[in-house]
Image 1 (cartoon, rainbow over the protein chains, first blue to last red):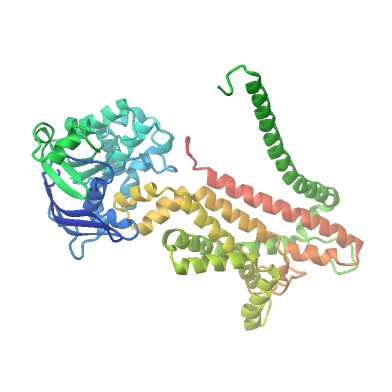
Image 2 (image 1 turned 90 degrees about the vertical axis):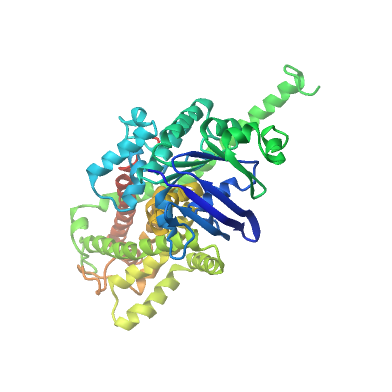
Length: 253
Length: 292
């Protein structure tokens, strides 16, 4: 089951450069929430702060309060590795582990976190691949083919399966379809729609139609600030802020 | 208006391009042949000079005293294998570990220092490394040994392996590391099980290069392994090695020993080729279809 996310006063830096300014955002469980905005507005930085991936970049750091379920993400003594185990992440460019088979790609997170039970592993791998709508296409070549041998769209669904296998509560997607063709994109979007039954999904996207199609809530970022955050329908029909309106009507960005 | 299709000028240009294309291909092929030629020549020459002397006695017996005909280099073959095993056990993990440090943590002054030191060590003449190990180990223990020979060769392997590992790890795209970290895999586990595994083909090549390079070394063994006319399997005793034996026989005044020196050199090359090929076969077994 998914859990909600509460963000209060989140700031993020790259060196001395302030990339996110005092973000407050409340993301409900088992919903799809989209984050939109022009390039460089901080939307990717924002989701990377939620699972503490931001700080893996040299000289980058963040502070503020992020609560995912009952976990204080930036609390004293919170191990970023534990946080990331609870929060799955899918990246812009499909990044399967190239030297591993399809099965091993999905099993990687389980195996490297210490799961040894073969039968349980088989079940989780199958369940994840079914959930990411890839099972039928790869079930006969699970152990024979490398993850890198799949098409771009399949690779991205493999990466989603890999993220789901460790049974996260939240799934972060950083422009998951921006490197894919329209057919693969629509498959991923259908998938996102299914996934919200089990997970809380946060999706970063450049594509406003995509946000309108998949998300119930949408946040608009501009120059490191959250300008407006509301029901998707409201954002795209009657935005409260002039800057949001300018962006969605294509006047800049 | 320039270069309309079918114009005389376009035809001339296309002819020039085709010429340049063939010239560049020809240059590359020529260079490849030039590189292969000396290697082939050495191998053929060794076969001509040495193959006739490789027989059962040569492969199974120890050297005969000076002046007596026959005997072999069996003890030297085993000795070489022993010394190289010690060198690999020490040099490969240390080299890979150092390479991991440089690639994953070494973007700082200390990393630069290590990198510089490794490059200098790579250029240190092998006899100097032999003398250093003589001073550090042989003098302390007061006897020559297979172990000290292995240490000398192991030290020589480290910089090559470290730099090769670093280069190969740097080629692994950062998105692969991020994917692993994002799954909640700790950094050390990500480095060993994901990043190093992704780069493994190149890292293995680096190890094989280092191995092949030290396998034929003679100078670092002169004051360490020292050589031995008899069987030895103990790490703390002086040990024969093929390269030492070939050197000793080649500068001897005996015709029969010259003959055996050629055979020894041939066996040494064959041993290196077999070892490298074996590692390649074993490590490529797990490779999958479509692996880039």
